[in-house]
Length: 92
Image (cartoon, rainbow, N blue to C red; front, side, top):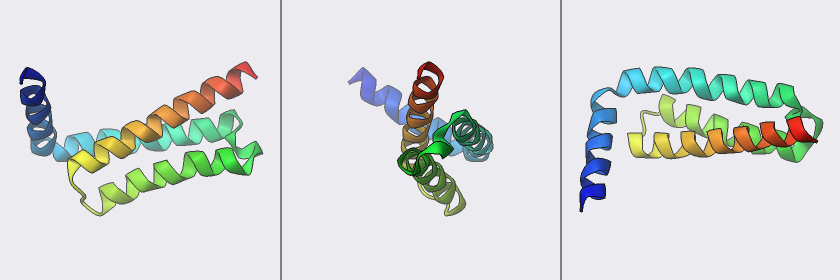
């Protein structure tokens, strides 16, 4: 029960601070996508698509004023993909 209360509090907080959260997400998602492409995702079409699609989805949801739950979910997905590909291109 406590986890649900924390989740609803987080959603209420992000919805209340919507414009602050959105401005940080635009900066973080945009920069991480660009850095990942610079690390080597541009070499292969599949990795480029894997970076561009979630990044553009997140930015489109922000522009379309979608619910914060959708925006945060797509932002986390984009960040995970970016981080995993950065690690992959750094190691190999």
